[in-house]
Image (cartoon, rainbow, N blue to C red; front, side, top):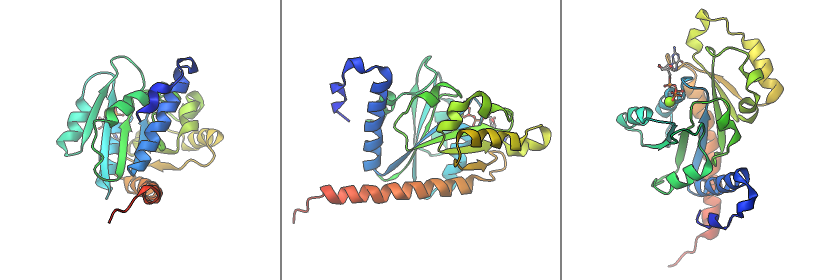
Length: 234
Ligand SMILES: Nc1nc2c(ncn2[C@@H]2O[C@H](COP(=O)(O)OP(=O)(O)OP(=O)(O)O)[C@@H](O)[C@H]2O)c(=O)[nH]1
Ligand SMILES: [Mg+2]
């Protein structure tokens, strides 16, 4: 994490971001931390999803909250006993890898687990910047309308998992699930799509299981590396 200053300044902002993102990803992998970059428009239920998922996790959760201003979500999560750290961008519409790298230096990753990073509420900018995640998690909702994959393709294309939230509201809306899924599949053939409700809590158990499985694979990878570098002094 400390040799990032060697980057050629001519490489450009995106290259530099990707380079640091790669470092963050390696650092987290070696600590057995699965990094989930949670993105979605304002109010889709990003914070609600973190709260619900943590109820179903047996492994240690860490949270970084990204907001333009305020620490409302961080206060709410901390008051539930969830270790949460705040990043404010004061204008920028997305988090970037240097912000996460800097924050990671202040977090004590005592045990393996999952780091949820709630990105800035925005369906456009966050999709363009890697922040070192293993999993890009897109939160979409039935309230936004079924045409969102067609209008905001990059977020849907890049997602490793899609959460369709607020399904409790389907009876009151004209959400066309078939049209939505057709749009998703045109961009992202195999991405798993989980239907959930932050109101009733349905669906999150399955998402938590999916994430735990991913985290498990990471841990085995980490132990493998730890073994390679371990020198036993007896
Ligand atoms: N009916 C219903 N409301 C929900 C659901 N999930 C979240 N909400 C409500 O939607 C509002 C926004 O939820 P948040 O979790 O704060 O959304 P967010 O994406 O974190 O919002 P920002 O951080 O501001 O971008 C809150 O009032 C939630 O109670 C759901 O599944 N059904
Ligand atoms: Mg939030």
